[in-house]
Amino acid sequence: MLNPQLNKHGELQHLLTTEGLPRAIVNQILDTASSFVGVSDREVKKVPLMRGKSVFNLFFENSTRTRTTFEIASKRLSADVINLNIQASSASKGESLLDTIDNLSAMHADMFVVRHASSGAPYLIAKHLHDTRQNHVHVVNAGDGRHAHPTQGLLDMYTIRHYKHDFTKLRVAIVGDILHSRVARSDIHALTTLGVPEIRAIGPHTLLPGGLEQLGVRTFTNMDEGLKDVDVIIMLRLQSERMSGALLPSAQEYFKSYGLTQERLALAAPDAIVMHPGPMNRGVEIESAVADGPQAVILSQVTFGIAVRMAVMSILAGNQG
Amino acid sequence: MSQSNPNTLDAEALYAALLEQVRAGIAGAHEPAIVGIHSGGAWIAERLARDLDLTQRLGVLDVSFYRDDYAKKGLPAEVKPTNIGFDVSGATIVLVDDVLYTGRTTRAAINELFDYGRPARIMLAALVDRGERQLPVAADFVAAHTRMGEGEALRLQQAETGQFKLTIERDHA
Image 1 (tube, chains in turn orange, brown):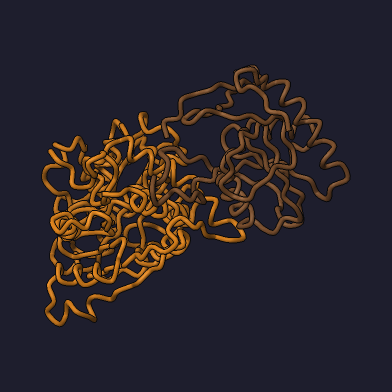
Image 2: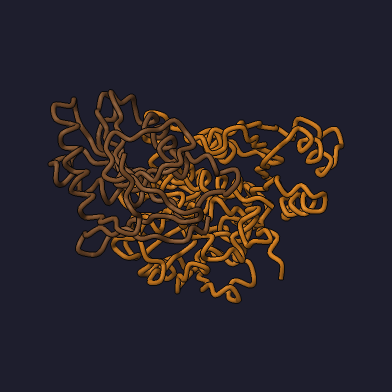
């Protein structure tokens, strides 16, 4: 099947999902990112790669944090960044998504970074660019609905590789609201591609989607059982709106069953790392003592996230149609 | 200058000659340092740093993020990290490449170095200068001058023993 993310040379044309992303490309992104990590420590925190390129951040759904990291990454690549607060602009006046894209393309956009509440919106844009022969324009999915958040998945892989080196011997547990989490999906696909032998999903029945077993994921509703001997723990943010949706009793009840405490962390491997895509709800899914503890690598994820996004954008911008 | 036959270049003898040139050239220099351009230049730089007792003042550059052919070719599949472990500001830097050719790599390397600080001076050392410059770049230290046929590339290789060898390859680029 044709992979819409790849061009006719098999190179990355858009980054839409980690699902089906060839291992060689995942490794290329991670290797390139490691060369970008040092750029942020220099006197001049910039490289001239994307000088003269225009990156449009199209956030149809709010996200200060992700938008900022893409903005920093673009600027460190010397690209011009244009942030569009779509909710306050054309879309609210009734303009269609693809009309918005055509208008911005007419302003000579080179890349769209897209966050959208609807799963598949970045695909729609990529397909439209292809159909209108605008193959010099690239799309990065910055999170679409419940579907995918590939740069978060890739920065998680970078973080795991940084601390654990070898994927092929790891037990990785993803904990929390798997059902609504595009991060969980992107992580599961990337971990599978990189050869992780054991992926576990831990959460209450109401937040574990069907079909996880088909992806090779072991599911646990008992957190203590699920954490036993794992090397990596990926905590997910519990979105407060899930409480009102009757999927969960209360934040306190959730913390009692699925909050990561020091006692629970002790069930994992002694050198296990604790990850979280942020923003964290302390006292809901994670205890402060763990979040600030020696096994947490949450702030490293943020730092590596810039380098990974720089790698993705510079690889994309260098690949032509 | 006398031109050498590219088929008879002895990389080890050239290295010995380059070492003596660099040794004399940086005598009395202010805060000398050695920076090699990945990959052949980095091997030479490592050896120079050892032989000149400058291992604390050694850096490695991968100029992929500064190349002028990115828009045409994109990023190479493999980019090595740049690692400059000393303060560039005020340093006398010997920039090392294996083969000096168009001068474009040198341009990229100088640009990258300046993003680490303001060196007092940058000097250029190359094992072989094959001419055909496309930019106004000249080396301070060169062990041999040669000419290559069109589509030919001169590649430095390093054996596990650390020994250098130059080979001629058909250029795929």
